[in-house]
Every structure is written in C-alpha cells, then in structure tokens.
Image (cartoon, rainbow, N blue to C red):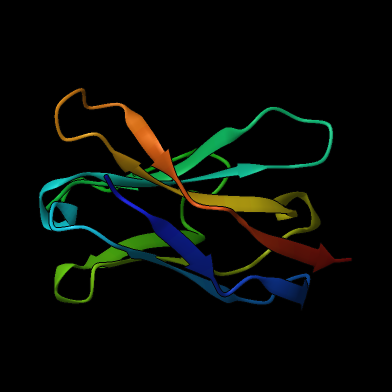
Length: 119
C-alpha cells in the first residue's frame, strides 16, 4: 500500500512557475513508476507526466512538453513536478499517482492540489 500527499499548488500569474511535490509512504517507492495527472473543471482527468523507478525515461503530455519537468528523489520518497511558463489552461487539480508494483497500473492516488493560473 502506498499513500501519497501532494503540496505546492496555488495561484500564479500567466508565465509564472510552481513546483509540486508528492511525498509517498511505503517501502516500495524506489521501485515503482510515478506520474502526475490533472483534472480541470468539467473535464476528464488527463495525463501530464510520468517517470520510471530510477528517474529515467520521463514522458510528457504534448501540452506541457518543454514547460514541465518531472523528477524524483528516492531518498526522500518524493516526486516533483516543476511547472514553468504556466498558462491559464494549466488550471486544474493536480494529482500524484503511483504504479502498483504487481499490476503496473496507477492504483494509488493522492488527494490532489489546486493550481490556478490567472490571465
């Protein structure tokens, strides 16, 4: 079982930056892939970025490529999402997710953190 707690959301102006953090409990963190997703009001939850267990192979949604960077610190059981050049369309609740070590699916989710980008 993995528990996830996100932080770092807030209100920022267009063009600004935020860094989200997600702290995970559990001893399997360093062996599992992690991801960030987001859900805007009235829209489906969408994939933002993912990173493998060792920090390699970061993958990004086209909408954030070149602006967002996912990283992790296994010693701190933490995954980060650095968000630069923020746009109003980035406004959403951002969720951290952890893969199930056995099934490979994103089975564990945080409670979400709100990011609002003012125009």
